[in-house]
Structure formats: structure tokens, C-alpha cells
Image (cartoon, rainbow, N blue to C red; front, side, top):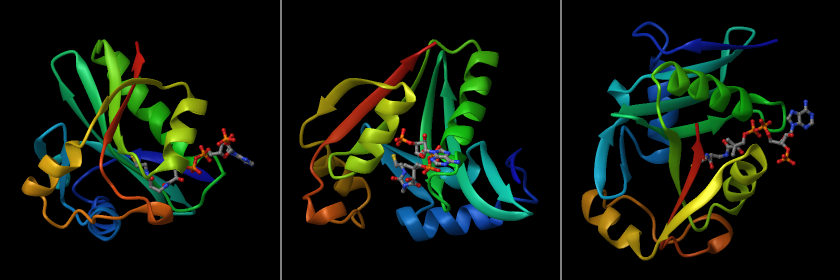
Length: 158
Ligand SMILES: CC(C)(COP(=O)(O)OP(=O)(O)OC[C@H]1O[C@@H](n2cnc3c(N)ncnc32)[C@H](O)[C@@H]1OP(=O)(O)O)[C@@H](O)C(=O)NCCC(=O)NCCS
């Protein structure tokens, strides 16, 4: 049974560890800004009390950015449940849009987000060059040996 809980100081340690492992966190770079995910709000997905996914987000004015999303048990609805939890918060806060950045190599996420209902808003060509200046640990090559070059910006208008 999957449960989604708000991140709290008590439950966020495994999420911080996951972000460190998966994204060389806690720092995350998008659109030329560095965000410290360890202080962002978010959600943890639990399967019988064990972490099976997590999301962090940032609300800025009337926009909500999905900063990180990870599912540890794919194709069980965890990724979608986490996005829905963030969408609820964005609506509660009267946000105008939910947006996110993924990189050009992440074809699985690009497919997933579009099937979920996100629209492509922009492709920021060669944005990863600037991102690497802020976070040098971003690898040059990503999924399927695709060079990580561009930021794909997706959004849902609320
Ligand atoms: C992208 C990611 C978050 C998706 O998470 P997920 O938990 O697999 O997502 P869901 O289970 O909600 O949906 C994935 C698919 O499984 C399907 N699915 C959901 N529940 C299902 C079930 N019980 N049985 C069969 N299929 C199911 C969904 O319909 C969806 O299918 P579709 O892709 O054909 O539309 C996950 O692959 C991930 O963590 N990737 C690595 C990190 C990453 O890239 N994050 C995004 C960076 S920006």
C-alpha cells in the first residue's frame, strides 16, 4: 500500500540521501539558479513504511516548480501520485502554473511528463553549459549515452 506524506524534519533523511545519490544533491540547478533541495518542501512515497519515491518543489510567487522527482518502483503510479500531491499544493497556493526542467537525455521522463499532461514550454539550448558552471558535478553524458546539453521546460497551466 503506497502512502504519500509531506516531508518533515523527521522523515526527510532518506529523501536527502536519495537526492544525493541520484542527483549529486543537495544542490539542484535549473534555469541558471541553484536550489538547496534539503530545505525545500516536498513529499515522500512510502510502501509499508519504506521510501519508494520522493518529490521536492518550490513555490515562487504564482509559480510552482517541481524540482526533483524520483520513483524507486516504477510503473506503480508512484511518480504520478507524487506529482498529484504537488499539483494539489500548487492549486491551494493559487499558482498559475506547475513547471519543471528535465534534460534532453532523459527521454523516459520526457515521455512520462507528456503522458501525464505536461506541455513543452521551451527548450533552453545549451543551458547545461551554464548549469555546469554552477554545479560542476553534472555529467557530460547521460541516459543512453546521450550528451546532456539542453534544458526541456514543461508546464501544466492551472
Ligand atoms: C519518471 C519517473 C518519476 C516515473 O515514475 P513512475 O513511478 O514509474 O510513474 P507512474 O508509475 O506514475 O507512471 C509510469 C507509467 O506506469 C503506468 N502505471 C502506473 N501504475 C501502474 C500499474 N499499477 N500497473 C501498470 N502500469 C502502471 C502509468 O500509466 C505510466 O504509463 P505510461 O508511461 O505509459 O503513461 C521514474 O521513472 C523515475 O524516477 N525516473 C528516474 C528519475 C527521473 O528521471 N526523474 C525525473 C527527472 S526530471
